[in-house]
Length: 556
Ligand SMILES: Cc1cc2nc3c(=O)[nH]c(=O)nc-3n(C[C@H](O)[C@H](O)[C@H](O)COP(=O)(O)OP(=O)(O)OC[C@H]3O[C@@H](n4cnc5c(N)ncnc54)[C@H](O)[C@@H]3O)c2cc1C
Image 1 (cartoon, rainbow, N blue to C red):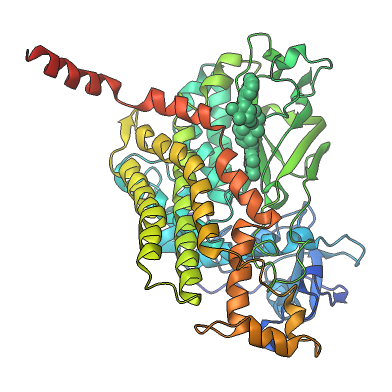
Image 2 (tube, protein in one colour):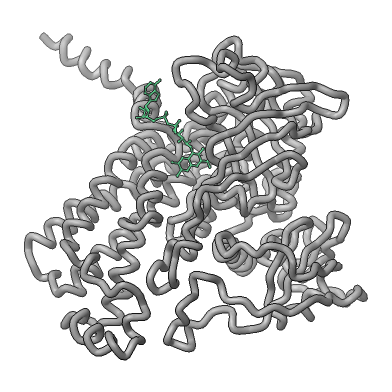
């Protein structure tokens, strides 16, 4: 047993006498898997599957793994539908008490594969506990490392390792993995004094929810930027009230929220949603000055996703990233959502909502994760660029080597150095080690500009290669086109199938609708360029720089 009273991976799960899971077995092929891949080893979902759903009161007993860091545990949280292989139902029969549902619940190929990737990562996390967990310095015992309140550079090193672990699961292509908002909440808990200023019970709420999220390893998304309705007027002066989320009513049980936030990436895969404003509020915006958490299945919470890319993909071979790594940006609408008082961190307090991200270490802690994740993506980009060159036998060309070195490798090394500098030289105060803001904001400011340059460099290396591609994987199958496809899409470095596979991957990375969204994400996931630049302005050590000038001036 571990400190939470659940079994660790090394111990045998206890025998349980629970009712068996029954249900209709369904055979389904997601839309993106058509036409059928020609390599039988690559055919997915060939095993019969059963769909199950947990009800609110169903218990999840110990299942032989670190609770929460486990793909099945993630998929089978109450209220979440899961589509699992029949082969593991026996295991589940001994692990969960589940209620089957008939096959009339909509299955979403739009979300299924991304959610599966997250579940796989939770599984992998359970097998890499030395990276994904660490000793809780307060209570002893182990906690998920993404929940560690950093008190030193070494603690930030542990956090970097777990961020990297999560980023590698999506090759850096998913930004809002569970460790992102976990970083915000961890920083809030490590800086509860800010929330105490609104009343000590609010600080208690922050710490209590942090502990719950940590112990249950909850997946949180966040919505903290409102829709662009009218930049020239504050929320309380809009033509209608509560276009942006705000408090319409206060009751003994809690507060009632109405309005909409513009984007909550990954919320379709998350358990809870954190809601507030990172954009400035005006003094009269007191009804909008909130900071709180709601479960994603709260009554009245509506999720309006943009068009998911997985359903646009004709096959994994043709759109390997669109089909599998779309974290789906989603507008969230609050149709009078009741939020119990215990889930409220700031209430009708403009000053605290404004202060919470920057006065606390939340912004730099969360963006430390973002930069670690971006570093993994840069490695992917570097690898793709090199392979692109190699598949055309261009690696020996001096100009191409200069481009790869100066326009790609330089930036990859530079970002790696910025992340490590932020970690090795933290600002430690009041028991918390902040990743150094100077390096965090330098990274964020450069990232927004350089991602455009990096994409352009890959395009320049490719020329027309992405447009000289067969229309789909089916071209390799049709008797009409097969021979020509095999013959005219090859290179001397690779057969046609492998070359086309690589080029389609790169095009999905930079050129498809998915690729375009990736670019927009890096440019705006936190804020517009001038906003980030001003943060850099405030973080740099101008005093030291000016002192150097003064010394020079005083010499003559
Ligand atoms: C792919 C993606 C995923 C995202 N995921 C999340 C998420 O998970 N959670 C979340 O809360 N948010 C998310 N965001 C939202 C993100 O935080 C915002 O897009 C970001 O803060 C910028 O705000 P904005 O979109 O309102 O753009 P703006 O800040 O309005 O910037 C757009 C342009 O307008 C200019 N501008 C800004 N203010 C003015 C003004 N007053 N007058 C004239 N021009 C102005 C800017 O310089 C910029 O050129 C995501 C965004 C993207 C693109």
